[in-house]
Amino acid sequence: MASTLRCRAALTLTALVVGCQRLDGDALSSGGGDTGDDGGGGTIAGTIADDDSAADESGNGEGPGMDCNPVTQTGCNPGEKCTAVSAAGTYGYECVSDSADLGLYEVCEQSPGTGADGCAAGTACIASEDAAGQCMQLCSVASDCEDALCVAAPVTHIPFCAPECSPFDAMCPGDTQCRPEGDRFVCRFSELADTGQTAEPCSGRDTGCGEGFACFPGGLVPGCSSESCCTPLCNADDTDTCSSPTACTPMFSAPAPGAESIGACIVEA
Image (cartoon, rainbow, N blue to C red; front, side, top):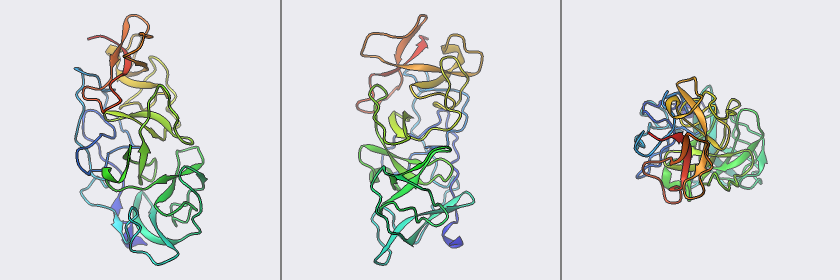
């Protein structure tokens, strides 16, 4: 197994705006459960430009070890599935024997060391820090996902398809939450500390913020005493629900289709 676990899965993020970016082509969105701290906060039209760059899966220019293909499910014998196996911060794809009868988004128990998690072929058991796992679709590149982004799982960094969503009517499966990723919102896993409310400190796109909030530079959030703070999301096409002196400002400078109305309550620059 060691030979297939040669990819360092930690994602190195060097862009100003941290997060899984919607990519042109088939590159993997960088981030998922690994947001980092950019010290800058969210993405606002005319304030912080969306960043189209992304690191590769491993952070060092190498891909994961692949004894088989987890998306096409090729390279394995009958009765086996190709799935992600991880250990010591690395992951690779191997053929494993598994009864594999759990459907997409069903509750499961993670088994990163063996990959035998009961999830059907093409899916793997993904979880946040404190929640039960759920079977999520595996991916390697953006085009593997339909109406979803290929993002990295918390802790293991295994890429999976995070369904697109709207923060105004989020219906995310299981323990995933509707959170910002690049130029839109997707259902992904949060971290234990992601509970912040208005004017509470945060970093990156939403690290430290609760669902329904995003992270922006402190100067744009009244009452913020940190470099960046959480502020509520809002619908820029609806009645402005933001408290003065903030106003509902479109969140993305180049939003994906359907994300044009997503805004944040900030002081207008």
